[in-house]
Length: 213
Image (cartoon, rainbow, N blue to C red; front, top):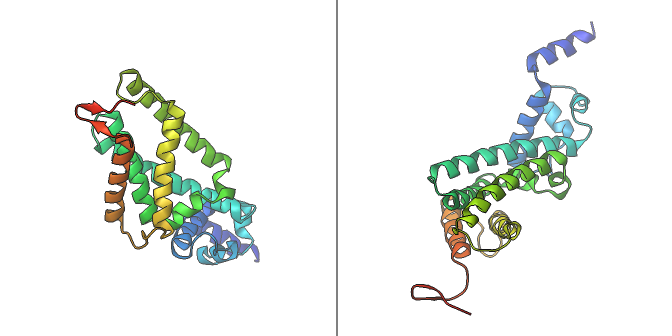
């Protein structure tokens, strides 16, 4: 008799791992990644407090799974923005960066969980970033070989663009430098301006080209 409730509960949820991740996404969006517990998630899903440990040995393991889900959603948003930008690789690259900032502003708690030091170094997250980097390096190398990109080391170009998108996102999400309260529309406009500065560079330009020296 004692086993029947457990069987009924497992049948109700079907995929307990998926249910735990979905519930965590909702809770993190509301309270942030620092203030949720496995016990609270279990209660929301409707299972015993010990049930989450069948799939996740600790809170960080569940957070890593949530971060992976967030990263997938972010990747989908960036891919969609790049696809809508047209055939030019640099336009696609810029659009993906702007989409990154927009995602962070629209989903600040999810942005934070993806960038928690203990989570960002997990293998699934590192693998996802690595695959994206390799794809972009290949695309940018082709553009650079055609003369459409400055002759800087590509890893430095990628690092500069990642620093810009992450840094701007962090400033907005953490309400630094007077950027608190900026909505998604305002964040997109700011990201467009900042990426334009990055694309043009900081050296003064002479009429007809970049000034020498």
